[in-house]
Length: 98
Image 1 (cartoon, rainbow, N blue to C red):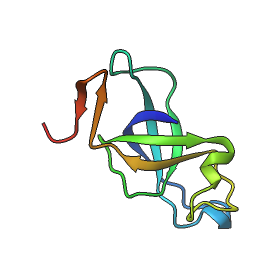
Image 2 (image 1 turned 120 degrees about the vertical axis):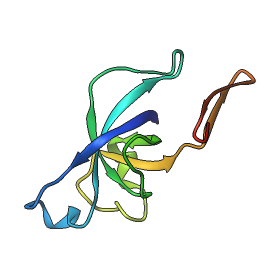
Image 3 (image 1 turned 180 degrees about the vertical axis):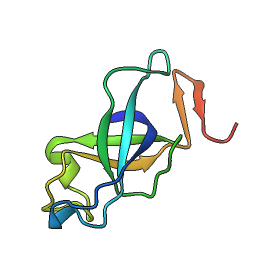
Image 4 (image 1 turned 30 degrees about the vertical axis):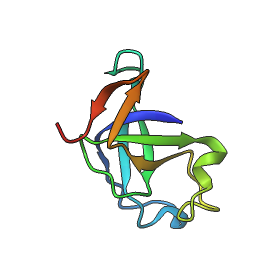
């Protein structure tokens, strides 16, 4: 699983039938040691109603096809949770509602 921030959306008028109706999100991974965005952006299928700016949990590969919404669909990254807060070693390092 990877924690990431939603940076934007992808709009595609023409796409495979099995992903019709899915919202596609542009995601930027977050380094949990520094809580800074890092690495290459990627696109994930939204299964939880996430929006731009939110911090989310993602899964990739075969795990991304193990949600009720993505089962049997051609996806390689799914957003599976919207993060409310993150605590590491007893310290709150992220809070959604500051």
